[in-house]
Length: 404
Image (cartoon, rainbow, N blue to C red; front, side, top):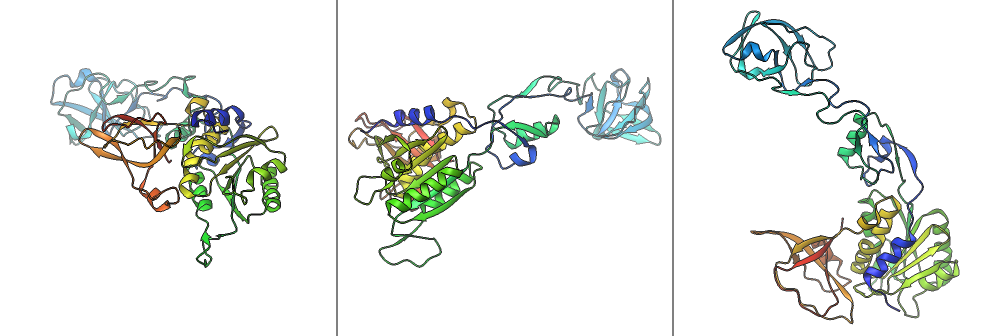
């Protein structure tokens, strides 16, 4: 029995549990995609002291209320320097960007607003207290939560971890994923192919999609043989959290994947989704923690199924909140979208984001069907056309699923 795309997603996320929390070195999460499993707190005030925001001279604001003013130069403070020349009435100190403001000073006059006459600095611009100073704790105070549990470890977040000394972070490891591509006609990309054969594009495309999430995956081609498929499926499931298998999931006499899944003890949670393309999608669980996804063989169906069902499962495994595992963007359409009823199925149409005078909008990409991988190259994702039998007028807001 076919289920709706929402029911399919809900079923997947209900049966996928986040992986066990691990302690990883900061260097091991630089590839991106990781999500924090614990809050990261500030270990000291940021900045830890009043610091100069630019190169110039540390002064007392009262001394430069009227300009030009002449001040005696008494020393220099560079970034990282322990020097603390005390700035008193009528004096100043050279200061470089990022250096701690010396005692007595309450403003920094930028270098461009000064001149020099031997050991005297001529200040040509007045300054108020606090000018060009980054005040202690103005960004964060010791103990503040800077990064919350569930936050993605973006490059900026990794930088924050380093800033507060969190060289080891608590996160969930990337899922181990295996890809099995079935079909007697499927050959490796580097092989010569006869007219009745084709090169494996699904496997490399899935590897690329997974790599964009920070996941490295191995790939294997298996012929249409129920025993061989079951053998490879069992071996892959033994050492991987998720197995993605393409082809062989429909109802033809050579579609052996459902049989193979059951043969190794897998429990099929659904087989068939009201979506186009990709109706024969299959999802199964094996034991308490293994997941198997069966995707149809056509490449656009594979990519649609991956981003609609597999990617949300992978996000859940690494700790993304359940409601955030399948992000959709709402944007207006450039042109009207005909419903083209498909038996109550949600239609996933190749689309891209374009810039119009009114802002970003969605434009369909012409496609010859679910086998048209070339058209998929011109797309940035899919627009979801609901199975309600109504056309979508130009300018109406639709749901767009980015393929990234």
